[in-house]
Image (cartoon, rainbow, N blue to C red; front, side):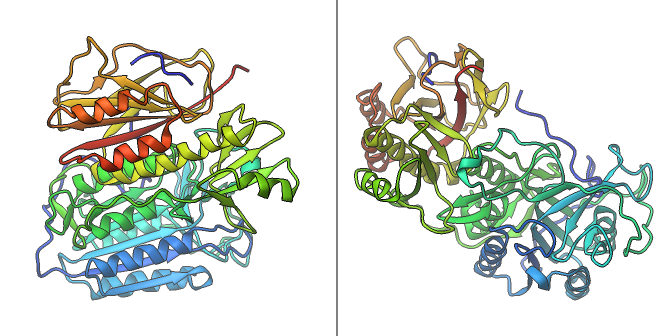
Length: 528
């Protein structure tokens, strides 16, 4: 796409069992004397359902992050260890040990599913959601290997004296923001969808859900990987499959979300970091939610000391070549700096289909068209290596960028608009990284105001029409408290040229000081 110019999505309701609307019945704090306990579950190997590749990585990353934050009492259950009985017993064990005011963190990475509600009238959509354990199948034996939302509600109510953090890196139904191209060997999704009614159920009869007017659960903070109408994909981060929510939660515990460096995380800090980091690394295929949003300045989690900020070197991307003989593909890769062959079962970062002249991301999007030869492929690889630098700079200083009418695939001729929100500084710089690696300086141009108001969203004045080149554009916004004259001058010098490597150097050499940065993927395609 060539950018010619220079509301946020609403939150869907979360699982019904977390009845967290509005008023808080009590104020919760994180006193120095309070303890934190953990229950961490990760399941890749399902006996009867599609296997996953990143849930064990998630569980281990979260456990290591909890330990870095000073948490010592952690139960971790992986794969076949995670049965209904062991998970329930571990929860009861941890809840029994905890004292009033302590924090209990329960994280789950694995498949979710959806079934007709077991207690009629409790769900607006007539569906219950469930966490599916390693031995689950719809028939006996095995249909009891699930934990339904009604039961989780009972667990949380029985532990109402505790500060509970529940992280669900799964999904239950929903559709894809953008379709997945099968050439990319997509990692998978964390749902089996709606599996229908359970007959001859091994679970005990359901307990009626709380009705309207019953006490709320102000002690529960719920992190969901995606909205109810979305699926949750697995993604590659730092070369390994992960769930983006689990990875971001682990980074938050390690201090990345601790904006004021007091080694405690508030709901506001957690929400800002999680929502933008997950959206960025998942390329807007999922939109996580954190609830409740009330009492946002309350500390709810410990955090490790915030790490010193560094910008890692551009990664070497794993590239899979289609449509060429192996020897020819290896020879071509020798002409593409920063890329190496994706071998065996390694998930690729990029796929090049030589016969179709298209480049694809490992998540299954066509990211560039008319990639005819090694020279064109070099530009695409350079752009995606630069994008890693941009994301590393952005994650600890997140900035909200939103695309209307949404994050789907936008066809030629479609008109879209971009909104900036949550910015604390006045000086805005906006540029685009086009699908073919071309750098486009967008704002401020002659005649534009150098500053923007910080007390309201800023919508780019003109609409943007989708035209060639198509693929994945990435708009980058930076806001600073003082005018970044040198950076803007150097950026203008790259305008209109495929200079991803040069821009990477500029970003690394800039002394950012106080800043916020956001990146927004815009996926485009030719007409029908």
